[in-house]
Length: 255
Image (cartoon, rainbow, N blue to C red; front, top):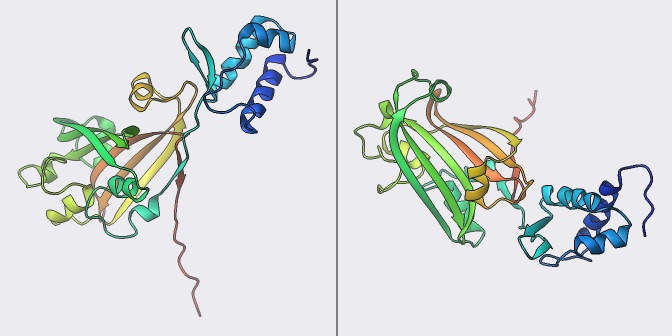
């Protein structure tokens, strides 16, 4: 029976079980002892055990299965997504497709495009008037059948309407950069803003995110010179990707 001092007992129990997971005493797929067994092992009440397990569940370390118990969750490998490397060479297709296939994984995506009007926020990002017509496309990207990313993109129809690349998907050219190249709007730079937040219910379902795992929300905008040509809201699970940025530094003056 454990003796607890200082920090709350449920946090110390969570620390102990977490350490067992970290050092591989408990491995992916292993079942945790039952609540009754943990109560006996640690000499605490049921509510303390439940609070400890909830901490681990919120950290994405364990998962509860109805009628079966609580199991150590398989930790998916972290993948590095390097912004600078996505555009080290001018792309001829989707950079997400190229990055996924470079890992030796099969790249697929599903999408749905529709014509709508720009909200005030989207209009500001695209440099157009609120209410102006845009194409909105919702994407879900997969790597070997695993959902890895959600994206909602917006393009001003003032740019693409009536051109061969009016539809973001389904044509001979895919990917923002090559599509804009085809209509003589040459993307010169990309900006991204990144923040972490709790996933929304539909995001958890679409990306199969474990309880307690946050998402990284990325706002990306493509520019041709000073003109925004596409903007997107991108969602990835924080336990699957490390966002690594290559930032070039100008050389020092030699005089």
